[in-house]
Length: 253
Ligand SMILES: O=C(O)CCC(=O)C(=O)O
Ligand SMILES: [Fe+2]
Image 1 (cartoon, rainbow, N blue to C red):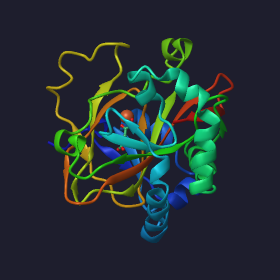
Image 2: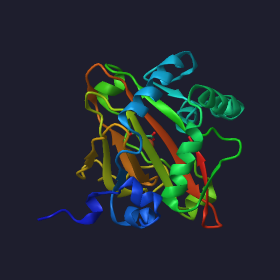
Image 3: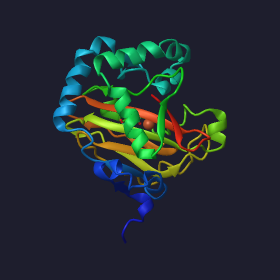
């Protein structure tokens, strides 16, 4: 029997996104995610990756250097009780990303604006889009990431009202083998606890191509899969939430 749309991932052309003819939010209601291939060319990705490595002294190590970020990620600070540092360093984080990857944060916001057919603003006081570096042969490459939702950054009110929220991942350097993002047909049912049957359900793996963008509902259960080979996994990430106005969104990392 063919998979129902809910358990498949939609694909959308960048041109269709630019022309505003695709309703990505509607696609996200009927699919596990939406992938947009070729958002960056392989050479653009390679150039960005070179800059990411040149900026390695400015990476933030997280979880005892299991992973690194360029720019500061909210969930890593939250889980390490470093919330104060996240906010104290937000401007520095953005300045560092801008210095190493000029225009990159703005480009991520522009992509989000296209995806939602609205306006994508900085989230005041928070860090803007950044990158995750998961080292080859590191702990995460062997074990995969946590199974999680991306709802940590929502306010209580946004969460209670189920404000529309998206996670956008742009793959700059996929690992040699593996490292897909596993998506489950499970939407955040409770704030603190995973549903008991979440791990029993079959997931769908999105095996990223270089320069590809993946959009998921931030309330969707997902997990980075283990990977092998000598190449670090480097992806850019941004989270976005829709404000009450309906067309305005706020973006952070
Ligand atoms: O890099 C990815 O594929 C997704 C990373 C992720 O789940 C996150 O940043 O919350
Ligand atoms: Fe996530």
